[in-house]
Length: 202
Ligand SMILES: [Fe+2]
Ligand SMILES: [Fe+2]
Image 1 (cartoon, rainbow, N blue to C red):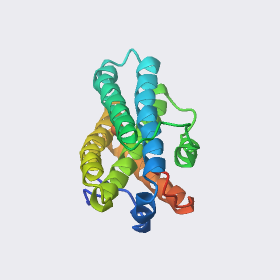
Image 2: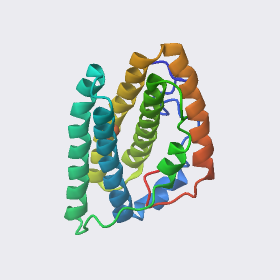
Image 3: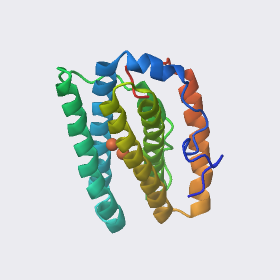
Image 4: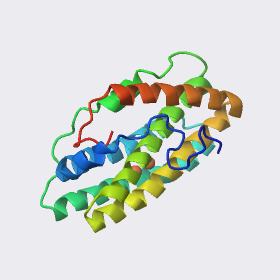
């Protein structure tokens, strides 16, 4: 997969996470874990929605069905990490990052174009989550949690590639990459505009 800037750790993302974020996040283990749990829930829900909206697309159903299970297992594992520390799940927080990204989804066009938009949206959230998990893996002091984030970083990197490859099933590769780079530029703008919070994954 060719991604701009060729850095396997930035996954083509244009704006690396501010290193200060990890320092703040370290002080908000509960907040980070709660927000993270909902990220996993949303990832599973998003795959389920894609499957039920596109039951006629065999490849999509085949590829996304196991990802639903994987994301849900991530959700359960985050719950365990919360429990170990004496915390419950608690209510979902406002997800300004994803809300801003969803506004960028282009309306109209063919059914394939609409599907590609959604697949790229998912790819982008996976890529940014992967990048954030990498920061947590490297910086978090708790060795168990650090290992957990290493494992999830690897898993989300796989999902990011899966979504991009899937998009290329429904649109030619060059067009997908052109749109992907537009998404990357817009995502960087969103990241720049968001307040840096230690109790949010994004
Ligand atoms: Fe996940
Ligand atoms: Fe994922």
